Image (spheres, helix red, strand yellow):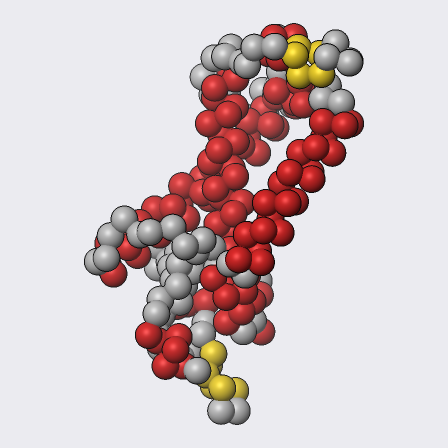
Length: 196
């Protein structure tokens, strides 16, 4: 089994060396994940040592969740910045409720989100849920760890690790950023230098 893991490095950045031995089964550790950086003393940040009892499948699952949340947060930051410029779609969001995109653009993003009708929220939940079920069946998180079969931009292993680390750092920053945008809107003056 270890040779199969060593033969291919998944997107989650699992390395080929075992870290902990339990019985005759070799386990991969959190220290083998891409994500260690100079900001946190060259270690992967795990202050509660949650990874100590995780096997490779759970580590992949946690890494996939981190990547997914980071990717969504990056899109959310772009969307927040786009709507902050006053840009919006044309037409009606809900003709039956009389809600247009223009009327929502006049509000702050949190208030605008609260005006979306319940049927619209359920449409988003079902659409996102359908995509989640499809991709989870095709590329299970516990195996793929965020790798959805997209062709890699480089075949160089070191350059690929560098790109993985860049995506993780950008995703982590975006998660902090979108929460900061929301907090600054909900509690004016709580985030320094916002709005720009």
